[in-house]
Image (cartoon, rainbow, N blue to C red; front, side):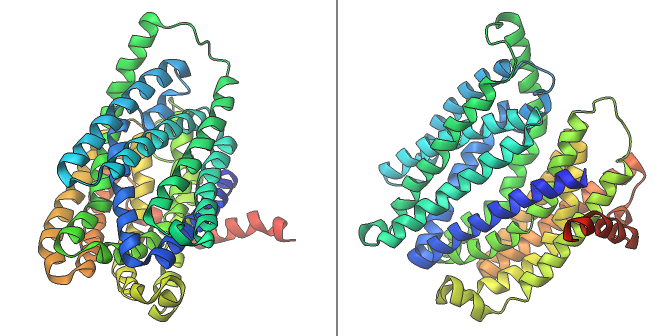
Length: 424
């Protein structure tokens, strides 16, 4: 399992580095205000995509080993088209942006939705290598497209350039993902009752599995809207850089949690606590997260201003306030994937709701007084509260407490034995 996690981590590391390149390019060439505008656009897209998961999302991964893929693909595509249309209209009513903004929002959210559906089905069938390559290609195309456009200079140095680069980044991998799906052995003509039954099952699983994702998104990104309301787009840009750098560290626990989830959904007869091998990987993921956080918070503001521009020095304070919550979230991701893999969605939903209450309360009280520092502090409080809730339920279910995720000397010895032949 650890080798698969390492492969997944390597892909996510490359993806994170490319994503960092996107953040750097947009911050360096467009400044804090331009970076803030792109962050709000990406957040609007993500908000729309959340509701697509009400008939898809992680439930596609869960059902892919059990059902005909085409019975899952057709309803997921149809629902994605409906949600993208309604979601774009809702953004138009609530935020009243320019018509061209809404056009890009609708088109790009749909491309992202279809790409996510295809890759989720491939991952559910354990095509992890294909999934990793497509995910990496998407971010690479976005970074390369932005780099080429910004180097060209002139009118290309604008927020609109991000939209055109995103069309390339999602459109081409979407087309490439169709090939592996078509090569799978599932028959494509048997619809009728089986299709309707699968749609009902998909809807049932999605409602339970995805509600926590909607709440989690609010915990992650509601602060952007609070800061935009109480401050301005420039402050959102500075906040987004600090958040992006800290969340990049989450590729470590997310890699472990994803492999753990795939193993759980492909082993439906297995019940009870996690095996020791999975716990060992989880402890190493927590250790890696904590180490990366310590390195990142030690970065001086002068380095941030040298890399991103002189407006982004305050992002270092954001990272320091987010640091404890970032480590706590490593534990939460591992426990959340355990409950999701067992189809016990209510506990994840309840934990996310606890975090949302803290996010809203902290945002209303702290952001008007402390600005982006208040947003970071509210996030850390939210992550801590929701993780504590999940830990309590995890102990009741498995008998394992918080110490189960604390690294041990034997874990380091195991890791050393695993990587030593590669180094030799």
